[in-house]
Length: 225
Image (cartoon, rainbow, N blue to C red; front, side, top):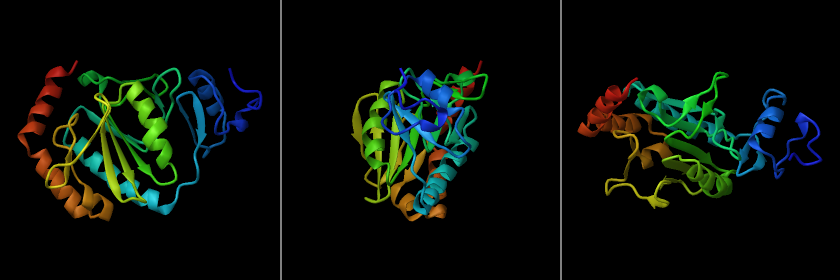
């Protein structure tokens, strides 16, 4: 049930407990520009985003968009409402998913929301770090997200989680993150933090030229319905 203080759509406040259905109904009535998420049944109203967030969001987003462009059947998105489950409706900074017609585990609703867990979610963590590494990580694992990236700006580190097996992963000896659920998605962590676009794209191109990526794309095509 919605708490007593949430009598109107404009009273969504951090800490309120609601079902996803109630949250979604209220959220659709809020003013344009208002942002909130439901994580584990708890409302989190977003703080204003600073320039550091925006710059780093763009760097990682451009990488995922480039991967999408070379991987038919894969779709990336940013700041999109994800209908995860009964207590989860986040708006992750970035996601990468396999489209349902290619065998992916999420769907697109008639009103253009993502229903179910994308295979990969990424968050840019500054003021939201504690939520991203705990409440969100737990909810994403609970509802079936396969891998999770958190770019921690204050600590200047990229953290990578295998949520299916509840473990944190490390990059290779060359400091390249080779994403398992999306073969060929190679991320140079140092270049990402430095926003070195040329280096980021050069390393990604190596991944896109790999046998693993070629086999992945072939498998997607074979699964197409």
